[in-house]
Image 1: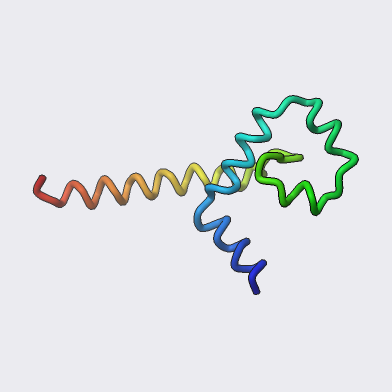
Image 2: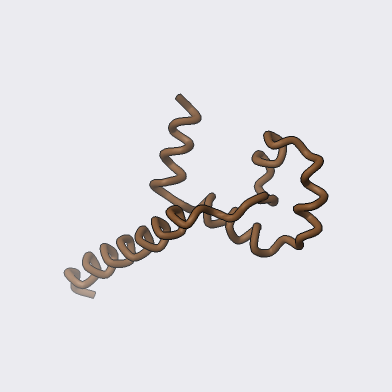
Length: 82
């Protein structure tokens, strides 16, 4: 149940996936070569290492999420007297 909740929260609020995408883009290729000897479970638990970039579907969802959240914030603030 906890794993399903974690997966759902990753899709509803994509900060972890975006962070792992940034880490993947910033780490040197040598880090990937050295990490091949590590276990998959150990590597996935490390927040400062990402063995693969996020999926295209996740990237598109993240862009859509940001657009929707900014649109809702703009709409809410446009209806207030500031």
